[in-house]
Length: 491
Image 1 (cartoon, rainbow, N blue to C red):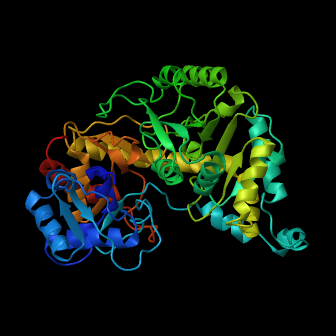
Image 2 (image 1 turned 120 degrees about the vertical axis):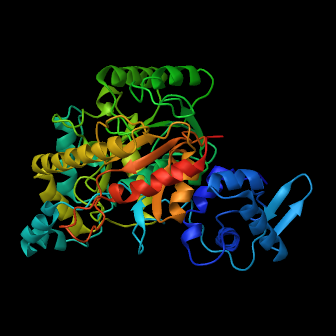
Image 3 (image 1 turned 180 degrees about the vertical axis):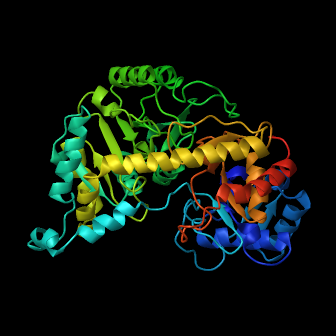
């Protein structure tokens, strides 16, 4: 079996040192044993060398040596000369849970959680809910409530939005989903077969990487953001992409290309007009199917908002565009959609029926109300994000002047470079001190950007207290700075 890279294993071990009292070797051994029993690491997988794992976790080599020794004494680890140490499973293997992107959401006592950039809900959600009545539900009650494609009125409103943006769309080209993540999962399951080549930007949205890896896709990253080391560069995040894609498709034929043209996660950048045209030219010329993820488009900081969909510049039937209301209004509103050709929408709807017969109708009625207030919601969220971004930049400039970042075009996080510092080790050390943060390799198909952290700047320390103005980033920064000092250089 293949050896699991130390960087990937360190992400699987998120929070291991905060799981309870005890010596670090015992905590690490317990965490490794749990990975094997859950099936997150397949039996027989070769573990990283002790030196490599120690570096990734930000601990001493003796800690890893002792943990491996404890597992070997239990019969949970088999050491073979020339092939390293391999984990053994014991007992029932549970359902695999992946790399835990959602596992660290929420907070524990004494923990500052910067693992998510999700925002608190807008008051407009409660206002829209208050305005709903039984009359709004009367028409839906005449049917059985199972709407695998979505509420007709909602699909029509979404189609109208695309038409207004210059992309001709009919309601039967819209599939309503339970958030943008379900939309991405459906596309991955419905359009990608195991072993298919999928082109992604590097870095890119980690939820997309996880969904594609789980499907067994072969990920080919484009050098779309500076060098593999993550060096800061004052050019468009997508500048290198079109030329690299043209070269790549001279050798291989990818199944699809996954892009975030409007507001990019994690960098917060947006495609410039010339770059959008360059992408569209290459994609159209090569006839490549494009998944355009605009989940963060509504968090644009520009007064003009997000630009028209890239799909408007591409041949009809060659794109699937993802959208959502969850980022703008509230994460608890699980409402997203896919805009694609009718055959693709039909295929994805049939797939969706196997796991989810319909999105909740009441939430879709709520979405109809919310769509009518989009301009006001965008303005309110934009003002909020700008205020919090300015405060975060003042804080970082004062306390971490040696860190580097570029002002984002949208989103709720900064893509920060810690020059020469191992961000993976920084994140592990910070976790042990009660701060959860995501390092750059989590957003890379090739474990790049080792000196980068994604730092959410817009979330409050206490999400349950609207009067609490204590910023989570301000609470976490002293720990992050101390951890970075101890982490050492990128290896």
